[in-house]
Length: 77
Image (cartoon, rainbow, N blue to C red; front, side, top):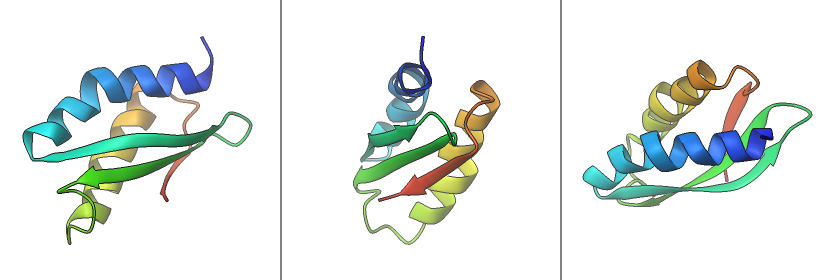
């Protein structure tokens, strides 16, 4: 399983349900397997929320890094 598939699986099963409970969502835009960078777009109530940067770094990025060591950085697009 490649990095993109691993990222999509963790987002689908673990991250997205938590965001949906708060009225938001997330989409994987790109996964750079060479650099370990994941580009995502926050959707729903997460888009434009003043707390979105905290959600991105403290929840999405930390969760992905803990579950998939190849992930080095999560970038919003």
